[in-house]
Amino acid sequence: MSRSGLKKSAGRAALAFALLASAGSVADAGTLRIGHTTWVGYGPMYLARDLGYFKDAGLEVDLQVIEDSSLYMAAAAAGKLDGSMSTIDEIMKYRSDDFCFKAVYTLDDSYGGDGILVQNDVSKIQDLKGVQVAMNEGSTSQFWFAYYLKQNGMTPEDVVVANMSADDAAAAFMAGSIPAAVTWEPNLTLAKNSGKGKVLVDSTAVPGVIVDVVELSCKVIQEQPDDVKALVAGLNKANEYIKTNKEKAYEIMAKGVGGYLTDPKDFAASAAGVRFYDEKMNKDYMGTVEKPGPLGDLVKLGGEIWTGLGHEMKMQIDYGTIVDTSFVNP
Image (cartoon, rainbow, N blue to C red; front, side, top):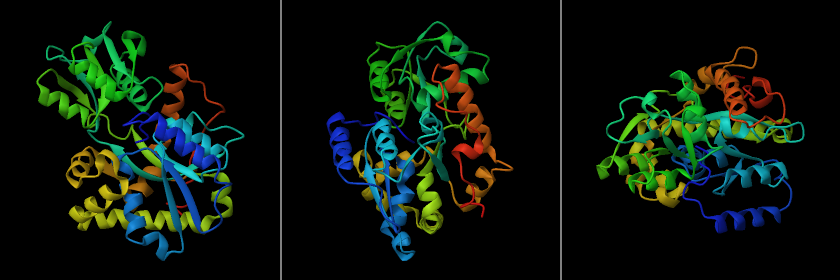
């Protein structure tokens, strides 16, 4: 997912942005430059690249690791990137009349990779009323937590939010300085194994809420449709490869994604908490602009939750504003 702050290095992010800023305008036809954080769900993009699926279709994909979503979105807005890989809820906050981009493919959703750490005596979400909960404000973690509260008749005002990164939240929880935390893997497993708490609920209970997509600028979509088609076709082939060659696929994706996922065993462990979306899942999940799939409900929900959390959208967003389904459902 677009994990702002995940294994984040401010110096590395700033350097990456500086390099992008001097790199000139977006690439010509035949090349797509895409920014992203380090996340297991982005593995299929590297798999398609390294197996030659993009190149076979005449497409070069330049993947830029920038461990801060605000930086790669700024680079895209400035025309230094053609798009990014990020959660749909997160990119909604950047869409405006002046910054036009749309999601063209669904990569994965969190299926156990995110959760809430609590003390052993907590048995239900209602037990957290009035309790301090650590999470990264403005991030996907807060979005998912707010959604889960809503599903259980609660609001964010029912808890006391301590703003910190997901990694810091988990560390504070295990140190005993915070009674609850919203975080993700591998922090959930580390906390459970420490014997200092438990996972109250994870994203298997509410699948399809934390969803990663590939978004591209409207200019690219309009002027380079063949490149977008090649991108989607390559990703579809990569997801089929995963099904029949999982061990080899994880090895290739681990090497490509790198960072804390460089070891194939670590990649496989993280991959257990996500669902990669293949061609059929994309067709069903995205639907069409005229008849949206479940992603349409998530877009609507995103606007409601972020607005309720005080993050006003820069423009009125409907499904066709933020999603282009024509490449998965031509």
